[in-house]
Length: 446
Image (cartoon, rainbow, N blue to C red; front, top):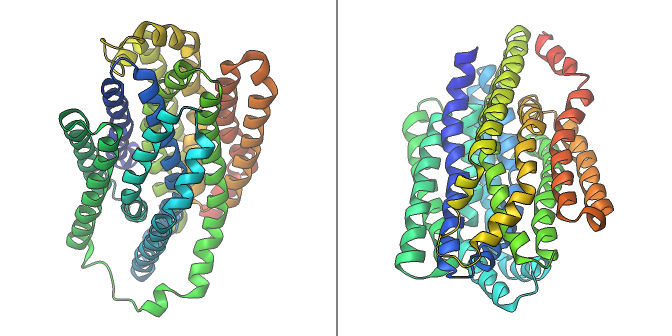
C-alpha cells in the first residue's frame, strides 16, 4: 500500500513543489525589478496573483469532479465511462475558459478596484499584470481537466512531467522577460501565458500517445448527455461552493493585508504565505494519492485496502508536517532572504516584521495536516456535500475571527483566523463522515 501511495504521491509532490518554487522565484524577481522599493512591487504581484487564484481556484471543481468520477470508472474497468469523462471535462473547461477570457474587462476592473491598496502606481502595475496574464486563463483551466482525468486514471507521472516543464519554462521566461528584457511584472505575466499554452500542447500529445488504444469512440450526444452532465454538475456544484469559500479566504487574506495600510505588512504576509504554500503543495501530493486510491477502491469494492490507504496517507501527511516545522524553525530566515535582494533599502524592516509573525508559519503545518488527506478522501468518494458544508463552517469561523479580533490584535488575527480555518476543515470533514465509517461502508457494499 505504501508503494501504491508513493507511486501517486511522489510524482505529484515533485510537480506540486514546482508551483510554490515558481511563486518564490516570481516573488524574488519582483523584489529585484522593484529597485529600492521591493515591498511595493512584491505587494502588487501578490494582489495580481490573488486575482488569478480567485479565477483558477473557482475552476478547480473541474479537476476535482473529474478525478473522483474517473477513478471510480477506472476501478470498475469501465473504459467507455472514463473516455466520456475526459471529453466532458475538456468541453466544460474550454467553455469556462473562453467565458472568463471574454469577460476580462469587467473582471479586471472590479478585481483591481476591490483589491486596491490605495496606491495609483501599484494599481497600474496590477492592471498591467492582469491584462497580460489573462491570455493564459483558458490554457490553465484546460490543464485542470487533463490533470484531473490523469489522476483518476492513477497516472501521476504525466502531470508531473507537464508541471515541471510549465514551471521551469515560467521561471526561465520570467527572468528573460523581466530582468533581461526589463518588462517588470508584465514580463512575469507573459511568462505564464507562454508556459501554460505550451503545457496544454504537450499534455494533449502525451495523452494521445499513451491512451489512444484504451479510449473508445464516443458520440457527441453521449458526451453531452444531460443525465451525465447533471451528475457531473451536481457533484461539481458542491465543489464550486466549497472552492469559492476557499478562494474567498485567500482573497480576503491578501485584501486584509492590503487594508492594513502598511506595505511592509502586505509584502511580509505575501512572502510568509509562500512558505506555507511550499508546505501545502508537498502535502497535496498525498491528498492526490488519497483521492485516486479512494475512488479506485470504492469502484473495486475493496474496503480493506481503502482502510489501509487512509491510515497510511494520514501517517505520511503528519510526517511531512513535522519535517516542515523543523525546516521553518531552523532556516526560515535563510529562505526569506531568497525573496528579497540584499541591495533592497527596506530589507531590514521586512525581516523585522517577518520575525513578529513567523511563529504562525511554524504552527500551521501541524494544524493543516488533516484537511489535506480528508479533502482527497472526499474527492475520491465523491462526497461533495461534506466538502461543501465543512468549508462553509470553517469559512464562517475564519471571518468571525478575522473581523472579531482584527481591531484588537491586528495582523495576528489574520494569521489566527487562517490557522483555525485550516484546522477546522479537517475536523469537520472527519466528523461529518461519521469518522469515515460511511465511506468505508460504501466500499464494502456489494
